[in-house]
Image (cartoon, rainbow, N blue to C red; front, side):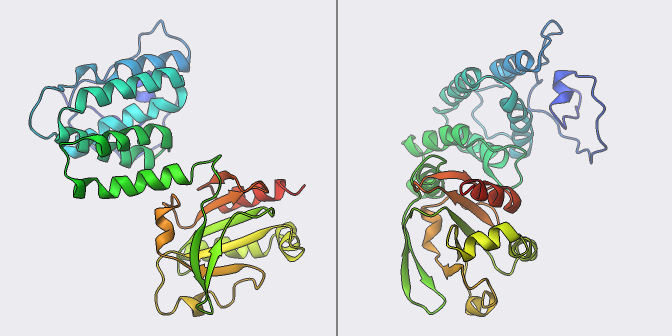
Length: 297
């Protein structure tokens, strides 16, 4: 099979859209990727076709492990169609895929890794917690996979489920700057829960933007918005690092909070409503600030 370049979704949709200059990596595909028929005009129709038929050329009967890089590339192309396909087609496609690989624990783990890279990890082009959870649950339920191999996936699944948008924000314990134990629990005041590393350069710039946002600063001063910043990987100097944070913020540290919250960015920000529900997570600082300000307007 000839070596093919697959970079973005438009290469398989055959759309006449000018492509931006990209760094191209040459990867030998595991199988021949499908191309949507020309008679399918809309993006939704073409992506529905691709989602439904993408894995038809893959050899599910193979016993040996596949090349993980090539599998990641195939899954990347597959994942690129998900945002534009119907939820029904996506769910049916993923369920069928998992059924085909569940009998082979090695292959199931490889697909779960590919799903993590392309649907969950910080470098993924898209995030789809719902789809990734299907792979996590399949790994966790598979009796042929050792429990120690499942542990990180169990932790990911628990955090995703506990801190999903729409759920009540989980309660957790943390240590404040004076080393006193405190407990966070949802209150009637809109809250920004921020988890991360205070030494990170990008976060320092984000914090400066938050401090310079007049509406946010005023809302915090008047007690209309709470901000809780939690250091998730504290060192012996963390109290000094956060010593100049806004005195109206609650600042502390907790290493165990990663068991309750889906923390995959620095910072990972959760917006909690007056009802204590998570209404947004893992968006940019600007987006999170706009969302929480919208709750008091």
